[in-house]
Length: 585
Image (cartoon, rainbow, N blue to C red; front, side, top):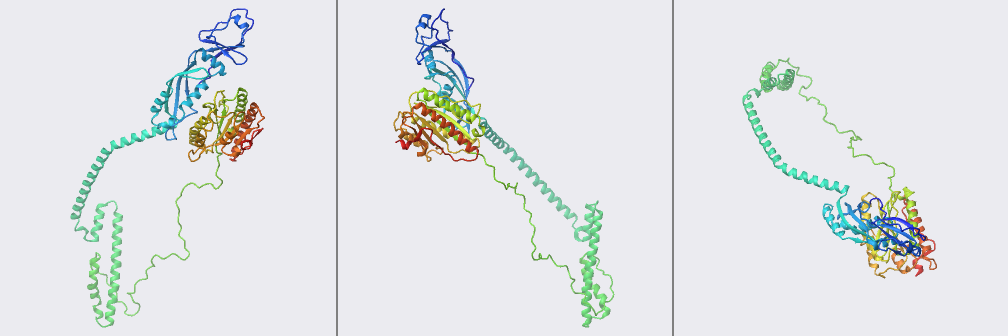
């Protein structure tokens, strides 16, 4: 809301002994006179003549500004939550207001207001409340059209103000805009990806065809190479020769392969020679051959083995072995194969890092948040309202001076009469939070209060939870000084509010009754017997209102101090001069 506007330009006493002409007024000002008892009159906006002033019963002269004013307001403290219950709209209202003629000037002076903007703001908040739940966050224009229809007609308040020319502008808030931009960007990427799919698919097909052609060419080249080198690969020497041709820079590697090949040939020839000699030795022992035939037979029997290993089939001559002694064909003793682990051996296993370790100390705790609502009867007389207003001022000051306490509380104030209107939207009270102002009005409806509370608390709980806070069950202080106009018909709306099966955000209600309030109704409003209190029969209403005001301040601040210190239990003691409502039945 913008800066305050004062529609009462001046307030002066009516002179009794006028020595000159009456002070003239400007065309846009209306002169209103008031008696000491509160009677108000406006003689078509004209000032009284000196002779009329001398014997007049009026004591105070007011000059009221009749000009029209244009203002803009952003409903930031009362966001409209969308249909999904998570995202919110940002609502800006351009509007015009003025005093509704001479009769409006009288009503405005009678209301005691200075700044009309809180009345206008409260009306707009009440008019728009809950409207966002009918629209998705993407349909801000639909909500804008709906709100413009709601406030299309001029409205005249009982305070003498006329509101007209409302123009509403709606857009998603910053968090919701980020969400919508993400959805739009995702859709854009999907559309672009679908458009790029066809050329990408064609590129893959063309690349596969090229690779198939390359593979076929490679197969054909390999086949031609195999045909050309068919004779070369028949011997080990040919393979080594081919390697040297294809890797001319690795002559050392080719010579190393040649050396290993010669060593393998020599080892194979030696093994075959040893086996042949063993066989010849057995045959000689048994008289099957003569000793002079050994060398010739060795060459004949082992020449085939030598040629199979790539040699020329000729083996080096050996001296005739001694036929007695060791057995040269005994197999060599090879090193044992992989052995089993020794008994007691445990393999080492290295585990991958899972993530950062969790601290072993206690987890840090965050104090929960309590939602406190004050529903104050505005149908009371002025003395009682003044006492309650001073109590609200004291509570506001106490919370502003204790930020650690205010941090765990959210406070909302509603004025209850024939209708229920918000005097302070749910907020963390600080030096910059405005003090709620009570406005005396006629009528008293419990049903209207309960109908207003149910959607309001549900919306507030959603908003506070979205801020990351842990929300306790809300607490409602219900102050009444009279009997409801609807009799007992309020109980159905009360049940809708407090039944946890119907309302997940059902609050606790603490009922305080005084003056003309009925003990049975007060007991019925309290959600527990120990939450309903009635003033003593002999206690006057103003004194009881003073006790209620002190009780509100002390109870709310004390509860906030316990929450801030980590204790979430809620306890309550009756105000001074009060007793349980069930004891007063």
